Image 1 (cartoon, rainbow, N blue to C red):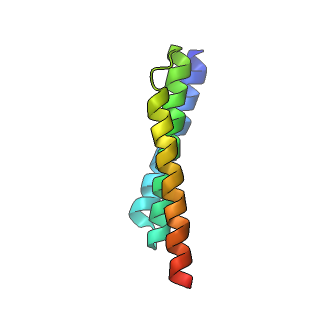
Image 2 (image 1 turned 30 degrees about the vertical axis):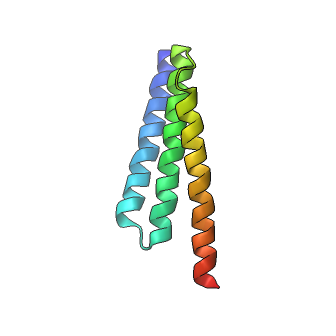
Length: 86
């Protein structure tokens, strides 16, 4: 069990690192926003993994709020990108 937890933690840390690099070096605003959305997704995955390892459901409301935030952010990004091209 602990080997799986370490592997998941390393993969999540690598995803956060790559997203932060994209936020810092992103050539335009859309790359930075997509990397921010990826950070939210990684946070959801990390909280879900923590809840699964510790076998509790107290983080469920936080997961729901983060999911809603990610959805609203994605919809806003699409509307913003569509508004620029029109």
